[in-house]
Image (cartoon, rainbow, N blue to C red; front, side, top):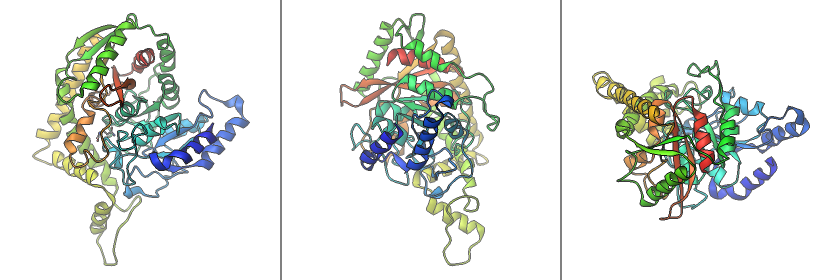
Length: 454
Ligand code: GLN
């Protein structure tokens, strides 16, 4: 199976460019170890996987899509990586991504864009476009992504694959190169909800190496997916988020969503409309909080500790080396975020910007709490549009940011959320995603509803 996927990568990855690095030798060795000791096999032993290049791997480079870390081989495995290896999952390689996971199209990668297998002229979403494209192009049956504002779910939606952002703290962040630590969460990507559930159980669970890891049992997601496959949602209450419709939503996406809601009703779910009035402020709050945390986290790339160091022949102070290196190593979006975040955190502006954004975050969490008193899950389109053309939004950061309009609230509140394929848009024939959101630690509800729906 591993060899077949390596062959497929050889055939199509020149066109898709999902991978930044392929480790045929390592993947085949892991597969062979499973063949030789089948008695130790887990449910996913021997099922190969594509790993987003934001998680550390001690035998492969970890670039985070940045020139800053080009060629850097970490001295340790992320907890997610380690758990995959322990489960006998061969790691095919590392997937392309927007630099430091900042973006919605994978065009911010320093190593060139990934192409959407449904239409090569279009983006595969981002930041985890490589992981999603590898699934859609059948280069891998499983992948790992990370989701700070939508980077698992939005690529899932626009490539017709399943992507799950687990409850914050449900999957260890140890070895996940930090973008915005209070939002970052690794999660499973797959072509079916049950596959995602099997992967979820491999990577989730308490980790003392991550201080925000939750010390609680992993929600029973595999059992929930199997239950969902019976196609019966009687007794499940579904809330349609009123705020996520109208202007800015493509008609084809809107119609697909309405059909999805009808389908949930046909499966026996009770559907009601729910208002979450503060969700419309999620995007602006996110674009203060995430850049603020980014400006702090990326201070570690100082030309002393990791990767790139730029200095010409002249004599330079440490400060000059640092600034030359950061100038050369970071792309425009990363610089924009560092500047935004530094500004928002600076004295005199902190309360007005960062402080206000944190208050909005609390209001969004309260909207979720109120909604989940009435319903079991909330649904919305995953993203307002289908995959846009490569190059279409590169000069317009605001248009790019809007791709995550519907996904960001779950990150701000720390909830669990999934994107499940919802057919093709009747407007342009491209994949559409249905987003399902559940309370923190109720990830199993996503899998039950998602599996019944898919
Ligand atoms: N597109 C969002 C951003 O640019 C989300 C990225 C992510 O989830 N890593 O920040």
